[in-house]
Amino acid sequence: MDVPSKLLPAVDASLSDARDPVLRTREIQGDVLVGLEKDVENFLFFRIADVPAFKSALRRDLISRVTTMEMVQLREVQIQAAKQVGHHERLHLSGLNIGFTHRGLEVLLGKGQADGMDPSFISGAAAAARDLGDPVDADGRPRWIAGFAHDEIHGVLLLTGPFGGEGHELDVIEKETRAILDLLGGSVQVVYQEIGRVRPQRGHEHFGFLDGVSQPGIRGLTARQNPANPDQGLPGQDLLWPGEFVFGYPGQSPDQAVEAPGPEPEMPHPWMCDGAFMVFRRLNQRVPEFHAFLETQGEALGLDPALLGARMVGRWQSGAPVMIAPLQDDPLVGEDPLRNNDFEFGGDAKQRRCPYAAHIRKTYPRDDLEGVVPNGEAGVQTHRIKRAGIPFGPEVQEDEAEDRATKRERGLMFVCYQTSITEQFEFVQKSWSNNTGFVFGKTRPNSTDPVTPGHDPIIGQTTDGSARTMDEPLPNYPTGNTRSTLNLPEPFIVPTAAGYFFMPSILALQTVLS
Ligand code: N7H
Image 1 (spheres, helix red, strand yellow):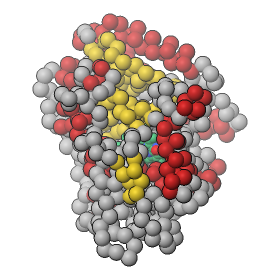
Image 2 (cartoon, helix red, strand yellow):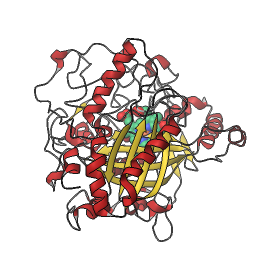
Image 3 (tube, rainbow, N blue to C red):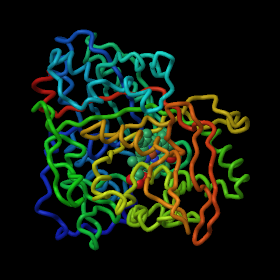
Image 4 (cartoon, rainbow, N blue to C red):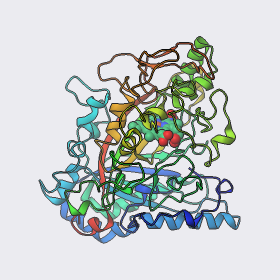
């Protein structure tokens, strides 16, 4: 997300912490912790057809083109400097990152040489589909684009740009893709490729909500901008140990305070150092159906459709959190990084401001488990993800809006980084978003009856075809006591492809992998 720089205070150097680890920014790929600058992004999924030829092309031509975290950070400085002297055009900043599936690693390293890694990574995305609630056939195969459903993929190339100027990004990215494929010669077969692109409403995903607002802060990377709390980046953004997202650094500890360094995540192979797991999910969004639902259900419940949408997500389309703006949007809060993330959920014990099942409360419950389980917030911080997705597909066309029906595929190329797919992405999807009982330990006003919050109405899925519901779409803010249930007869998001990748360090690419 572009943060309006006028809204950010100068960073106070006295807020640094001597314990912060020094990140090896020349080793870590650029998309992992910071994120490649993206107006467009081509996701190129490939199979390695000729191993020696692939390795030699990788060594000779590709590794030097991989965009590191250091390069992304330098570019950010460049962008700020250009803005300060009045250049507001998009700079040409093409990016390249590369990752491998477990099968891909075995092709490069030899059978058994990538054993002991995260079990979900080893078994792959297709094997997890049924458990995550993705639509599957009778034989358990996900109903995805063929190459993904049949686990044919060995690796992914992420090609990104702004390419300077507007309007010709697609031509340039196609040209850059051809150039990379030329370098790889016949050593790979493309299984699938697709270009994601920011929407004309910049920063907003297809349902219309501002995305990329809340990301975990990372010690050693994120500047401390909250004088009131030296363990936060922006106000409300807790700083986490980088081992949650990249191997070779301390991570979080579920048993100690959030601020305390935990153990480094287990790394069965030294070449995993400075690498990270990437989860890719191609999620179709049924946009006209989503908006039609907000209107009809809003009317049925006597709720403004925008408020119903905000209660389902936990934020208004502007990005303003319902915890801060419970009844009416506040776009000034939405666009202000000093305020749009500065909240917790614990004080909202009766979901008057934000439903327990709202997308952002399910996927990052903040302090919601304090007092419910021992060390509740520290535990939550061991299940965070660093998101880096981009929308795909065209804007909703007139015929679709008129008929309130999707006729062209669109959605989100969801990407997130972590050091445990099992404990981070899959945990969030399965144990939180899909789990009707989560967040647990809550009661209703004037009652000790436990609440079943229901599904995350955005991404929650069922594994048995049962109906989805969300508790309390009606805000009882400030003091009401009306019971309501939102029935969610059809999904608004349909997974159509997925893959689990390992994004190695530059050193691993230069040595064992090539
Ligand atoms: Fe979600 N949406 O537009 O409704 N997401 N998400 N997400 N999401 C977030 O804080 C959305 C998906 C998370 O730190 C916002 O950036 C859509 C998956 C997490 O407070 C919005 C799709 C998973 C957060 C959306 C989708 C997550 C988050 C608020 C699919 C993981 C941060 C803006 C098409 C399993 C929570 C923001 C926090 C925020 C939407 C997918 C997780 C608007 C449309 C698959 C951790």
